[in-house]
Image (cartoon, rainbow, N blue to C red; front, side, top):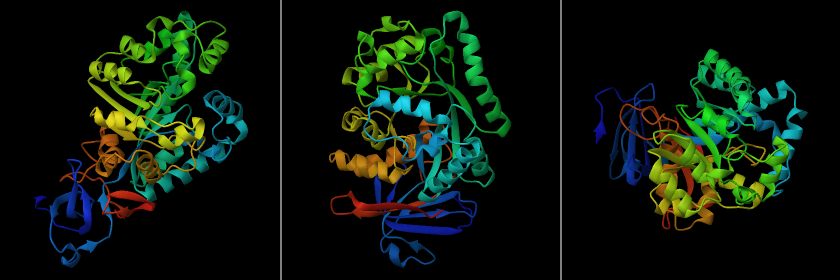
Amino acid sequence: MKNSTSTVWRSVAAPYLLDSDGTLLRNGVVRFAADGTVLGVESCDRIDSLPQTEYHNGILIPGMTNAHCHLELSCFKGAIPSQVGMVEFIRNVVSRRNDFSREEQEERAIEEDLSMWREGIQAVGDISNDTTSFPAKVKAKTEGRTRYHTFAEFFGLPADDEAEAFYRRSVDPVVAAADRAGLPVTPTQHSTYFMSDRLFKRAADSPLMSIHFMETPAEVDFFDRKGGIFELVSASAGREPDFLAYGGHAERLVGSLPREAHLILIHNTQMRRQDMELIMGYFEDVTFVLCPRSNYYIDADFPPAQMLYEAGARVALGTDSLSSNRSLSMVEEMKWLCAHNPALPLAAVLQWATLNGARALRFGDEIGSFEPGKRPGAVLLTGVDFDAMRLREDAKTVRLL
């Protein structure tokens, strides 16, 4: 047993437990101190008869990490039709952003944060273009709940001599507000297409970046001066983008960011194998985040989960926003991913939803796995076909700790 000498406050057991090495431990027991710190993990026969131990029928997993979310868009639930394509989706978000009052936006963010916590989400990587999600984050911090890493996102195509002032106007207010609130925050580029060359490189030294990458078919032909995204960007700038010489989205990343960058790439639905290999061969620390239900909601598309798994890439999961999803539910993302990728081992998907996301957000030393000294929370996953080790349609998660 991996344990500590501290007094045990609570022991929880189940037929399976997600161990720290990403395997499913049979007849797992995890013991906690009163402050939620893990004291030990063991496997034991007849766990349903252990003294002073709670027995639950399902899989015990640590609190999950939603590695990509836009909590500030929670008011958009049901507002944008599904499968309209990325260009029309962007137009909807931009044109309807002011349909909701500041109070409505803040209240919905608080509601969705609480919903994520109850489902078992321990940490969130959250994109912020403004501060409307900050009351929810401060409330979560004050109450000892969800941990957030805020990405102060910026985008635009200013001329070179205007790039610095543009960056300051976009990023500084969000970063300053997060700092005042005691919220971890780093600047990040929006994508590889909606950023002028100088503006994209402006955040190359950011300690942690979360970049939308190859999300939609409309991006595929961008560097060939074709497609809906190219037309949208060119019309927005009033000129041809100044970064086409990179020749591709992956090439732009490699040509603009240092090898030691801590990089999180979001969506990746149109990423080809050669793109993946170029990125993994260059960057020392890269995580690919998949948001499968969002991809289907916007474009009826699917991420390359099997390709990434076979390549041994670090993969994490996210929900994206309620502008492109029906809920901020990690278990629904796992169910969707498993249903459309039957060759993916369940243990791997559970690791993507927990430790990999925590590591991507640099919370991995504290949460994400049942290891002595960590305080990862505890979540019960039910609705599992244990014979096939697959998630059933009725699979759900509930927070135990």
